[in-house]
Length: 240
Image (cartoon, rainbow, N blue to C red; front, side, top):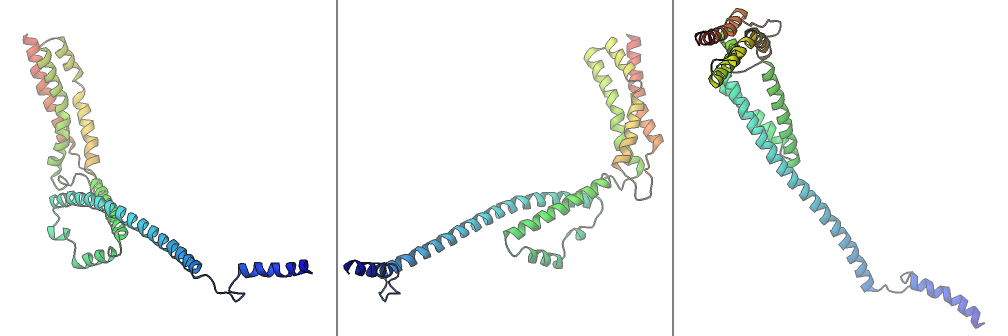
């Protein structure tokens, strides 16, 4: 009989120990407070970690936005100078109040939005640079064709004569100078072809137009320096 009582009362005691509230026993207030403290601590730690991650991301976004802002400002300053050289009125280069209001609204949310707007502005500035480059040298685009092309033909025509003069100064009249004169004979034609190609690349025509390469001027400019320098050096060699 005692063994059966033990079997009957054993599980009951286990149920009371496992669920004191169900058995009508008041829970331990210390255990309840400890459980609540652990739950609040876990929640607070999660909030703290989320706040730290958000603060770190915001700080990185601010730092990146500052660097992006410096690059965009520098690029816009260069573009403004080039556009003014091309004859664009200064008032056209200043944003209007509605444009400023729209830009302010688009960047009012967070540093991430500011960074996205700056990157978009950088992309637009890069596209504008490409458009300006496609139209050739902005400063000389409005010049007359002869003066504009002279900037290309003249430097190329002077390269070989200058090299011949340097060789003559360094070695004096002799075989080396003679060899430089012989090697320089076809160079005016090479300089002219290079200038002819460069004019078409640097000063592309408008849509449906043709490039004005001023061929006669280019040939004359490419030939005259070579003839003058070669003639002078040849006279020196013959007189020596």
